[in-house]
Amino acid sequence: MEHIFIAAAQDRYALDVFVQDGFDMLELSAIVEIVRDLNKPPVAAAIDLQVMSPRGGPVLALDGITSANSIPFNHRRGAGLLILVGSAMPDARLLATIFSKARAHGRYILALSGAATALKMRGAFGTAPISMPWNDAMACDMSDRHEETPDRIYLFDSCFGTSAGRFSAPHAILALLSRHCGNRAVSVTAERTLLGNLRSAHASQRVGVRERYRVDNPKLVKLIKLFEERFEEPLSVSETSVALGISLRQLQRLCRRELGVSPKRLLEDIRLNWARWRLEYSDMSITEIAYACGFGSSTNLATVFRRRYGKTPRNFREGGQPSEAVPCRMSDVSANRIDLKVYETD
Image (cartoon, rainbow, N blue to C red; front, side, top):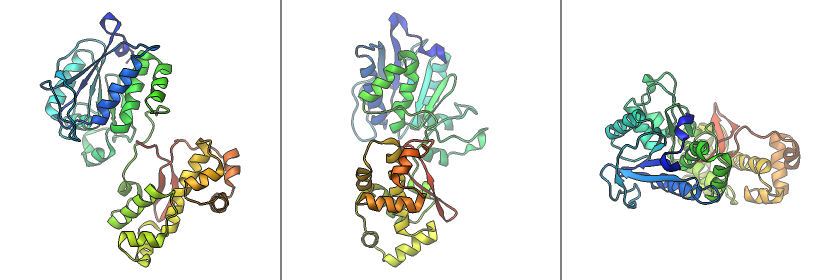
């Protein structure tokens, strides 16, 4: 797909963004900020950005914010990139028409989140593997595909790319623009726009609590969310049961029946996952990690860590092997046991 990254006429690179009512403002904002930064010296990428919509004028975002004026959609020919921003209520037929004509005009297309889902439902991608939001993928009938939709945050084909969208969108966009601007330029932009390190296409999407833990009980889902959001606090399991509106005994039975572990062990696993990640990938001291992960002291962290992994946090940091994926999300529950599993966040 090298041909799509040749600068357009007058040494400018044509980047068109198509939005519809109900579009994702986060995705559009990411595109605008990335282009604005890349166009600054010393890179001066000369990216010609145009925001388009079906009729032009203001477009209403999903969160009720009205975007700046857009121009009516028109097909620019030749090299460049067309990004189809996700929408909560996409006109799938219109998207499919735009997709088909853009390909005929030699444009490379990147479909984000809901746009990728809508095009998939219209059969626009054929049997090519694509990236789409995990919850949309679960709802889609995948029987017309040779291979199940991956959980990758983005995938690029020779003529089009797809992305799960939302927080994954900036990484997909920068990965494409790196062919035009260079890896160094997009890395600097990633830092300046607070993205940090760019994520590869192999990074996994973050999925919901129900799917990760394979549970349906609303009380248990609420418990896991509470533990994941407040694991750094000195949580009490008895106080947690009160917040959930059930007795401590009921909560313990529920956890053991559905997860095969006690609530205390569940919270401990979440804390240990974060402690392991910080030991491997942060410069925080062991005492700082202990407090940041809810253990209260380095001694308590060392005791729990040694009991679980057979080595101290210090020994783990000095000789532990890095995990394949970098950010750690939670423990995966399967067959009445909890195994350490690593996820990247969106």
